[in-house]
Image 1 (tube, rainbow, N blue to C red):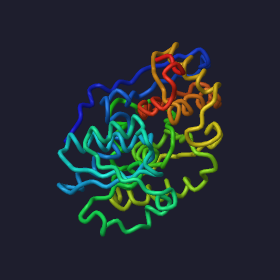
Image 2: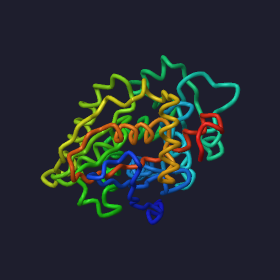
Image 3: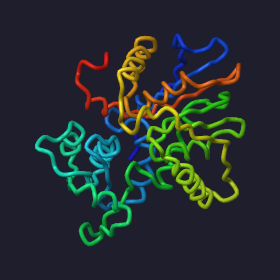
Image 4: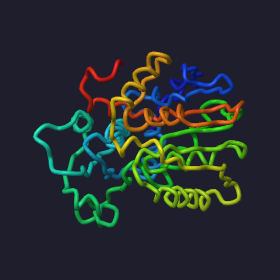
Length: 297
């Protein structure tokens, strides 16, 4: 199974707050596919390949981009799939979960306590022969897929590569495929997520084990200053920033990931002459959790 990469574009951006001595562009992964957009496909690609004909078992919350994308990808691939969903089943399913059901995903709701221990739980007795994809596609296969992102356009001239960070999977793929002269900066969207330093390092070690002497890692750093209060936390200031950015660029952002990435970029200092590449990781379906009059797109 493949998707058509020709929809992806590299778009120069010149928002009013960008210094004159800085150039910036955005790699529009959000344009890849209406339902498997952004980095989601790249994190799923090699996991689905490894699954063969087995059914997929994965995890997420009520508004999970990963759940929505996995359901859509499995429908296209002809694979049955199961989503372990955090929390009790609500009276009304979220738009995300409704989409997953429409795509054929079987939903299994578990308590938050059970969900907290999902990675150490033996799911085999309940779901024999299922291929498990961790929440967010967070494994070496997911990071391996994200290595392909920078090959979708000529990105060699950029000095900095920026992306939002949830699990660190996409960041690891970028670090292991960027050029040695490029600094990869991850803008963390979770509060207090210092553990991500080791999570990303572990993924890089896994990629290195696969690639051997071919492996190299670009310099990288995590930035923890722009989570906006924590995962999925929003504010009137963030909403206003996202709306203004859309007015100036016609690029829609989401409130969980890319909105905080671009907001963080606007507040960060870069040396004169820097050429900044921002990775639009999609996730726009998450905006449907907002009232319809909040965003202007």
